[in-house]
Length: 318
Image 1 (cartoon, rainbow, N blue to C red):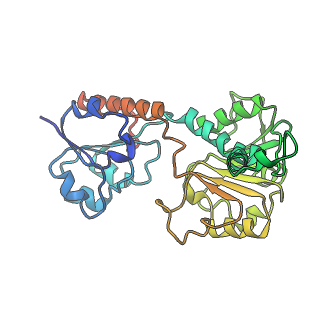
Image 2: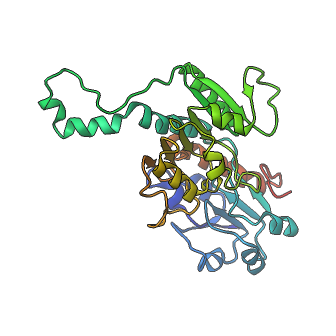
Image 3: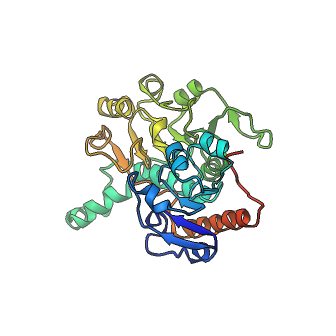
């Protein structure tokens, strides 16, 4: 029987979803978490390797020459050495598009955290402020409308498009910066990065991490933004120079930042953003609602089954 291994199941299951639909396809060993030191021993003689964030390097492939398929529980695959996989004829399948709606939803959760201050007001009420108020209402923490504001979307794939649709429902103005003009969406305003940064009240990142986008947001680009603007990142941490962003927040160059992803995850205690002024976080969960993870597992199953049947799909190593 075909042998398979899942190296970091806990990053997907969270205790509330099952991997049985995948494990039933092969003789499968399941590990909750694996680090660089035990990846090779845990792969053993498995020809199918499934992972979310474990690094499958050239060295791993050399020491486990029987690997024929690597399945990623994600859209991104920066943790896989794609060139090494190509050289060895290893199929690497990712899962595009599974989290579009959840990431777009989370983008607006981060935006509304600042614009509506629900968490901050909840704390004041529980601290007794409303009980002691002479007035029926108080609004000493700033509140803002989204209607009429301009959101700048950097990267216009499926998630960027979903964010645009939600923004329009809030009656926002939308600017887009993208490498390729979307021919099927003539209603959008495409502009340069510089114009987008200057004109936007909210800048939302939805681009992949590559040589062209690494530290795209840095001291120079941050200096173009409005002092009242906020920055949202649900894409990849490496798109931002975190020290430059911390400096911009602490100096008041921009108003706030909502961050779901970091250059190094989990966060280091000395991450420059950790104590930066008006920087708020979620721990890389934009992709993680229950329904999204259930969908992800189903699509990974389809990738594995297609490989077993000799007709690989979503192969990014070809």
